Length: 127
Image (cartoon, rainbow, N blue to C red; front, top):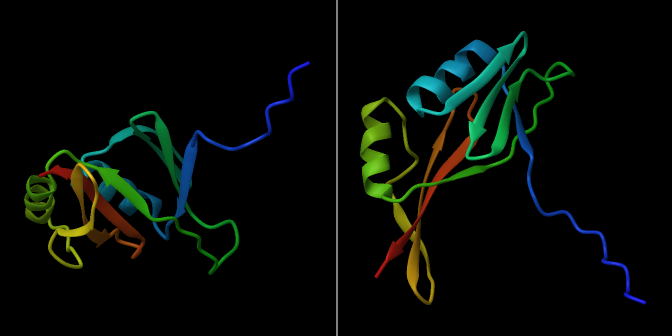
């Protein structure tokens, strides 16, 4: 008799970020970041992130916010940085190497949305 497979979480279906103004946040994620808007309803906006859904919503409790750091994979971090900076994204610094891996270097660049939620670009740069 096979032992039961232990329970473990794996796939992310949706990530939620609280924002103060859904329309402003939707415009930033759609127009500035170029993300695909799935749909918007009062108080919420939903985006497709390559199969993972991102939900932007106002807090259910006034003055209470929650955030996760979203790391967006990009093939060329320098080009993504230039493009986004050209769209008015204020980065917290230039793209920089975070770690030297066996077959690539991991690079990141951090920025914030209009509600100051931390977001990042990440790229595996071949050596």
